[in-house]
Length: 251
Image (cartoon, rainbow, N blue to C red; front, side, top):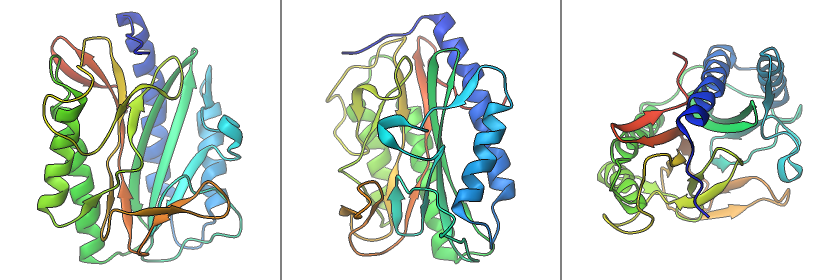
């Protein structure tokens, strides 16, 4: 069921989203070779909890043990933080974070470089970020989720990369995952119509190679089927009469 949010709820989500954005900015500056993914996770948890009324949204959700989904290189999403995984120079790392603030959820992700990365890896990150921007620009009242997916898919495939199809964006707000699903592919004017008050997580997951995925034996970590690298960027966005409002910005 679609849950439209009031103006007050959207403003509250933006307050939580600021905490989330600042968390990701802190992590982006902190990640370095030699860190474990568990260390990254604990930094995020401590930072989120240092803000009154804010808690990590992912911790304990569906049994997930971390505060951040940390996915390295060919891992697409849902990587579990662990002291056994040490980041090395040349890695790319997806940091997917949720915050629950004043009873409402926001969700955002970035993919960052650990040390120096190749030009092709940088292009993968740049294209994925641009695809997110294109998806947000299509999140207009009267458009449909298919318009968002089409915008994302067009950017990605024009660059020679592929969009993950088994995993999608989603509604977010009163729960972490709400209707509607927001695929990263599609056709204009198809799917759920976007109405003011709808709040969604738009999150392109882009593979350097084939679009296929598989899930590891931990039943969480989703990886590329061909072992090539993947990037992930995400914002929580409100549909308003004046267009899309990004709720996960630091200012």
